[in-house]
Length: 192
Image (cartoon, rainbow, N blue to C red; front, top):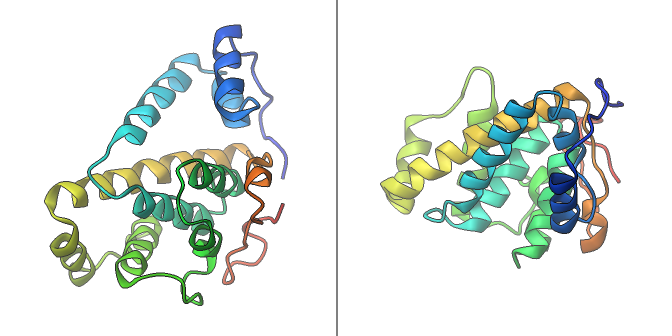
């Protein structure tokens, strides 16, 4: 797949900031810049979402990658691995998220978070009372609300990227773990 809309020219300050942060300008920012208000609000809200700190960072990272794998957002998996490395998260676990059901590296809480992320991503949602209650009992109300809002935001971002044709940019190359495809959806996530 290629971009379905051309990249827009970013203001120099924003472009330079993106290069400082990621090493390159993320294509999804360039695409969204056709509507600067949408792009700025998305960046601002994404920054606020990223600053939430009640729920465990690794659980949110795994949830993000589970959503990305289910939706087919190779860009999100790619940058998710990059952010996992920079956040000193478990890269072995991160690399296994797209095939978490078959992998033996995840703890029960992590598995439930991955299941919850997928259930929130399904259309219609497949979140069960039992799954929600189990997570709520272990995470507490504040972290459960944060995790839920985080997964909802990630759904917005991943779906926009896929719809706009944004694909992996090679961020994960710096952490030396390959993008893993989702086993049930062959071709949904391309390997880099």
